[in-house]
Image 1 (tube, each protein chain N blue to C red):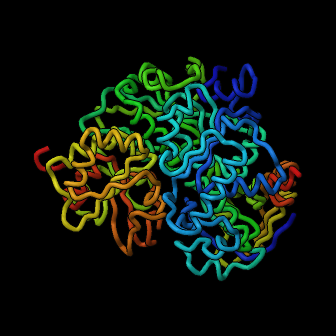
Image 2 (cartoon, chains in turn green, brown; image 1 turned 90 degrees about the vertical axis):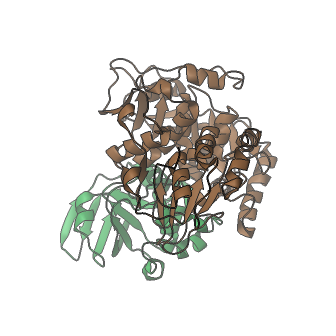
Image 3 (tube, each protein chain N blue to C red; image 1 turned 45 degrees about the vertical axis):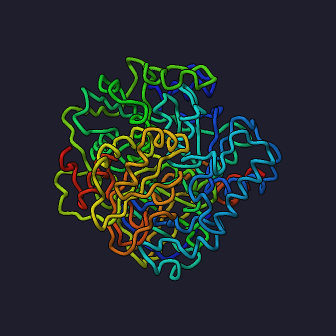
Length: 159
Length: 420
């Protein structure tokens, strides 16, 4: 599974309240959530992001609430992958469970800038920053986890 | 190598003699919890997978607490989805308006969680129940759905940080000050994936409400769980209320801890976590230049009887400063009733506060106290992230009920009130 897209760069401790504010949690409709994704830190994000784009962030991405609406909002707004220095525990688990590709790579996260073109190969663990001409290696997920992500989540993979 | 308290509980629930940090295991769950925001997503996953039965209708708790009484039509639909599911499967611990309370105050109060048990909940503050000597952690809705069907889930065995609490807390220093102080030391990801295990001679000075506050905010240090050893305070709390026998776990003498943090409780002073991270902790006494527009006293962190009493101590005979909106929310109906019996509600109302029925409401910017542009709020809640309680430019200062009440009567952040 390989994704290629444009980078949207964020900082450390991007919390679930900014990924999807709780005022919009009176629905779990993925398309509704997508429209509000990242609204409080970048109100233009949901309009600018295109299918296949990549979110890049620093440490502790997804800290805060257990709301699965957060990875759902990211996935349904079109972003195909999140690269971060580190992920908060519940967000990490939720992302795999709903089939959002995520990967930890500090160097790739540090180097990337807004608008860079990047590719992520979830199978081999290779990340390429095409704009900067740099390559990075991460530990790919075990095949079982890759299957969960590529089939769209835990419950779909279990069928 | 010995095991930590958390590791021992996981091992017992996985049918293993011993476990090591980093090991993956599948464990049997004693209680699965969901609320009105996370349960509908779990129901969609559950039904989408074609599942037709739950593993044990007595071991699933569904609490409608975030947006109830329903704040709008969409919330009403979500609650209806939970209600329909609960009725369909005969969920015994389903708590609707009239019986509900904020989940993490309600479950300990009804002793639906017990020492030595393993609990997962589709709410990040599920880590609260570690105060009772349980292993308890937050998960997402898909994990909730899977656990409702199978009674099991997988865990990576966590490593741990030992937090040694020493001596008796200084005057006006509460459980909230202790946990904020700790998060100030660790940072918001200093305990990522790890257990926080609280021990030391200072523990005996903390009542159950304070321990619940401390474990509640373990997640704000990134922790997987927080846990206290079960002692006389725990047993007294559970006595006559819990039908199951509590199991006491103690860490082995040679248990491995990644780090030990010692806190002298007698040397602490009331603190406040400033915007926009719970780790941005400063002494309350140094923040008197910050004027507030609102004070919120309640939530799964600080909506229990001890918290209500602490706030009432300040509000008795005093009035909220002009221009400050004070909102008090006892976390459960039982706590509300105790407040009525003790005369606390009258104290709050005479002080110019409003008192709400139990709800998570303002804590997560749902309703019942949303902030406008540039407004500042002192709150006994757990998160002060950007936009958490309303407008993206509003600011939240996290504090104890005592500090929040002192600030409400003065109109600025302080840990003092005249004549107190």
